[in-house]
Image 1: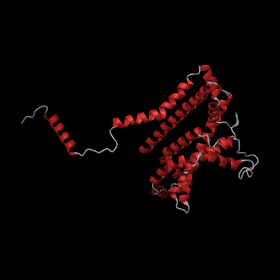
Image 2: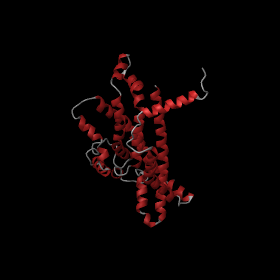
Image 3: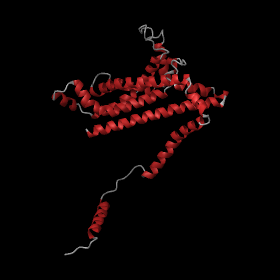
Length: 301
C-alpha cells in the first residue's frame, strides 16, 4: 500500500484547521492589539512624551557653555546633593521599616489594625503642603518635638528635616508593594524552615527575603523617585536655605517664577530639569533591570 508524498502534511493541516474550528475563540473585552496599542501610544505621547520633549526643546535654546554653567553652578550642585542624598536615605529607611510595617499588618491580628492600615495610605491622600506645615510645627525649635530633641540633633532647617519629610511621603510605596507578596507567601514556609532546624535570622535571609526582594526593590524605587520630585512637604521644614537645605525643585520654582526678567531664566530652569530627568531615568531603569533579574532568579529557585 502506497501513500501520496504530500498526504501526511496535508492531513496535519486539515486536523489543525478542524481543531481550530472546534476550539472556542477567546472573547476579548478590550479591542485588538493594534487598536489598543495605538490608544496607548497616543495617550503616553500626549501625557508624557510631549511635556518631556518640550523640556528638552526649551533647554536646547541655550548654548553648551550656558547649559553647563546652569547645571554645574555651586548652588545647583549643592541642591543635587541634597535632593539625591536625602531621597536615597529616605528610601533606604522606608525599605527597612516599610517591610516591618507590612509584616505586622499581614502576619498579625490586633485591635486597631484597620486604623493602622488606613493611616499608611494617609500620605497618598493628604496634600503635601499640609504634611509640610505639620512637620514644620512639630520640629520648630519651640515645637512639640523640636524642644525635646537632644542638643546635638536638629531637624528644622537641616538635611535631616528634608529626609524626615521624604520618609513620611515615601512609606506607603514600600508597604503597598510588599504587602500583597507577603499575603501570597504562606506561613507554612516559615514553619517548615523552623521544623528543619533553621533559626529565625536564617529563615528570614534564605527563605523570606528572596521572595520579597523584587517587591521591596520596586517599593524602594518608587519611594526614591517620589522623593526626587517632592516639593510641598519639604519647603517649610527646610526653609529653602541655598547651599544647605535647598533642593532642585526650589531652584526650578525660583527661576520659573522670575523668568519674566529674561527668557534665559526659564531655559536654565529647564536645563536643570533635564539633568534631573536623565539621572532619574537612568537610576530607575537600573533598579527595574535589577528587580527583573532578581525576580527571574527567584522563579528559577
